[in-house]
Image 1 (spheres, rainbow, N blue to C red):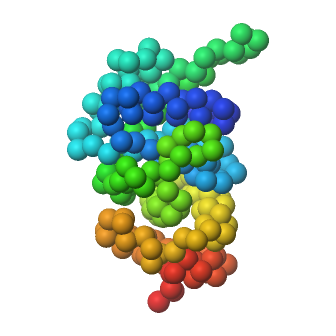
Image 2 (cartoon, one colour):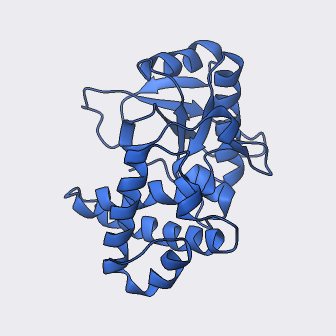
Length: 225
């Protein structure tokens, strides 16, 4: 599971530090997942930071860049599986002078287009949150949450149920936000065609499981058939 107990201020600090280094190195990047969702209006504080870097490089390269540019970034085995063959990127949060607690770290996951169903976001489509963070636009953020929900629904891992419940919570929050703005499936043709096709299939599946959300999806241009 992700590193628990982080505040939104800590999540934002990790996000800003990482995206600033990547941007300075010439990467076009934005927050995705729950970190982006929170900036859009999700009420649940995320547990980690997911970043999408628009590059065809191996994602290890921008991760290594972060480690080389700032000593607060480091590699370590996942906390729940210290015998794992892979390493996870972490950001060591500053220790508060008034706090006697152990120093906390924030997990940083970095992806490139095509990984975990993420579309390529053109630089001029990346938006900036009120807290000064580059984030994926609202519509694809909601659609990607649908893909996460599908993945957790199909997963047999012991924590999948908790993840799925979080996804449903986040989707409902984002659906309420997106209904209040001028966003519709019909004006999203700038997104990859495969991503939109997955969105239609995912929303259909979500609506079947949660029919109480059908009206909201209909307003966004999704139909049940």
